[in-house]
Length: 88
Image (cartoon, rainbow, N blue to C red; front, top):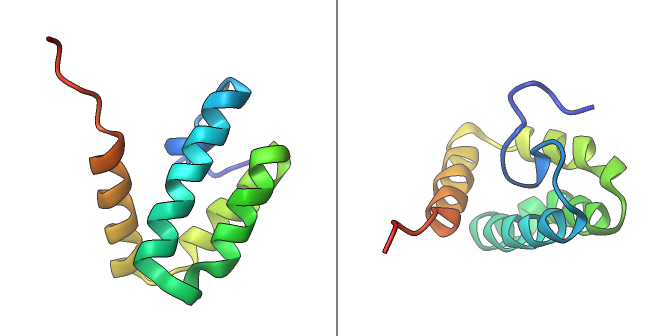
């Protein structure tokens, strides 16, 4: 089970499998681009979570273990690239 604060992105409860996979892939890209090799464990776990949602808590822990400033960059970048479009 993920922490009560980890309900964003692929960690949101009750996602359809395709949406969870898409969110994992988006977050993988953000984590990789921001952290480089320092985020390899988080990226690996997010890739595993594409097939096995049981890996999500470990992926959240790996992200939460990163330095505070790095997490802020990840959260801000992920929020920016997943921001809903305004109504037309």
